[in-house]
Length: 110
Image 1 (cartoon, helix red, strand yellow):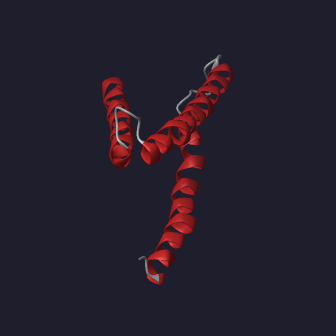
Image 2 (tube, helix red, strand yellow; image 1 turned 90 degrees about the vertical axis):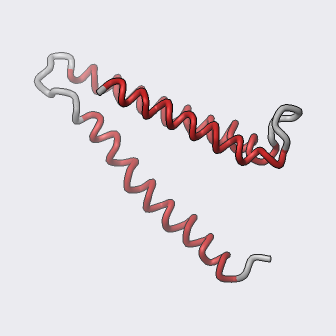
């Protein structure tokens, strides 16, 4: 039985902390990415358009995967392979592996 304190913390976490976190990173990350393009480059406009196109595309693909697949797998599992009780663990492991691959890709490019 959740007490009234845990409900309050849940509401603060979902309505305040998540809003601050996403509001703090989303406007900045695309600006920092576009700032990497040299404005003196003759193809700068084309490169910026391409950057924003791919940035928007990857954000939406990530949203589709998170809400379309991972949320469904977390709540239902993947019958008969992953039982319902292990759905959350499996979904978090998929997200963790994707983050590790992204990090290794980043390290490989630097």
